[in-house]
Image (cartoon, rainbow, N blue to C red; front, side, top):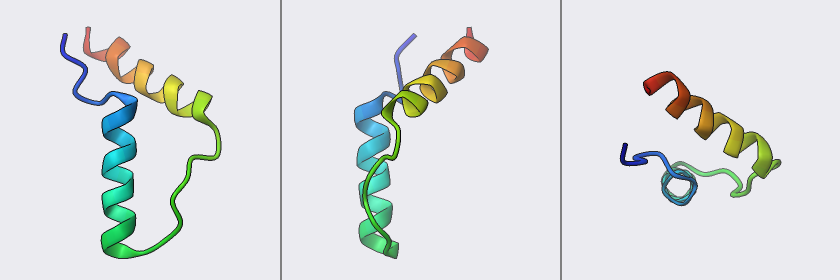
Length: 45
C-alpha cells in the first residue's frame, strides 16, 4: 500500500495550514506522530 500519509507529507500539510491560518509550527512528540501514522495503516490493511 502506498503511504499517502507519510510523516514528510503530514508535516508539509501542517506547515501549509499554519502559514495560511496562523499558529506555531512544530511537533511536540515525533513518536506520537509516528504511532498515529502507523495506526492509520493498521486499520486500512
